[in-house]
Image 1 (spheres, rainbow, N blue to C red):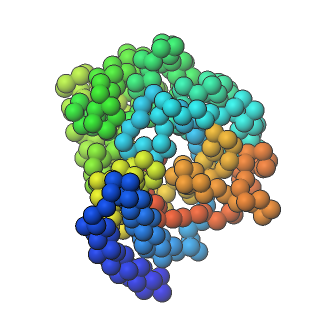
Image 2 (image 1 turned 135 degrees about the vertical axis):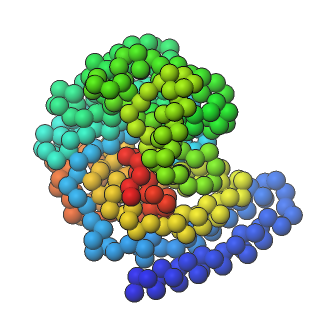
Image 3 (image 1 turned 120 degrees about the horizontal axis):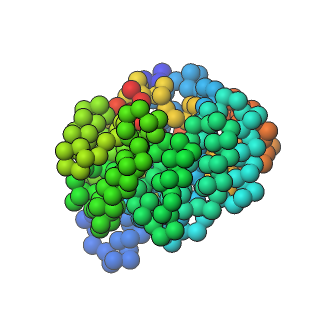
Length: 366
């Protein structure tokens, strides 16, 4: 039955191209063209097959939660084209101290949680970042910092690298390519050079160096409307290029697909590639990638304390619902394990996590 529903959905999806392309041929004013592009984006996303028909809902359930991921703020010193969070220097949303304290208070009552994953924006520039790191470190948790590398050279952050090393924070650093031109196109002029400087500083402290216990992982994102290549082969290329050209070492590479959410979906729509990209994701659905999806053993908490299945659902405002509340926050529960039986919300964006080799915050899932 699921196979028949999937086939009907894909056939309906194939019929969309005529309607979407018809909008391109319409001669309209600039303002009208903007409205049409917005409508087209809605139509494209509405016409994507139902993700539920591609999975078995009976077995697509949560495992014991092992990771609490916190998006502690949307402020960032960069504004990358692939950012699904719409972060930028203009954003002001940040997790306050009361919410940060509540997050830490939940950990002892959620013994299956072993990892605190800090993301943003640039999480290091948020007021609660160091408080959370110190608190989680004292509890013996593994701490991940999703770092854009340029933050290490921001004014006032001169001691940041030493602070991270002191608390043995694992760094997951975004470097979408090992070439300057490709990185600067996606992340801004001069970002590659600052990123290389950041990596050298981390290496000097022992990060990415065997035997130090200081882990440094890099993250690759495609710079166009295509899927991430095979992670293992790309890691070999990254290690070779960065070592030979800059003397940089790191532990591993995570290859992630770009998610059709917020700024990236808007970019695809502006360049008339959204339908093509969604088609690519659907056509490359990989059933073997489903078991390792991050929504199955992770809870995502927003800067305002609301709880989600993953960071992507968070950006699409799809919170976990309680029996009596339309959205749950960290102040509504006594343990994350109490949410073990809540259903996982899915949508068309989920095809981004199941396409090709699969994609999650921990890299490939198959």
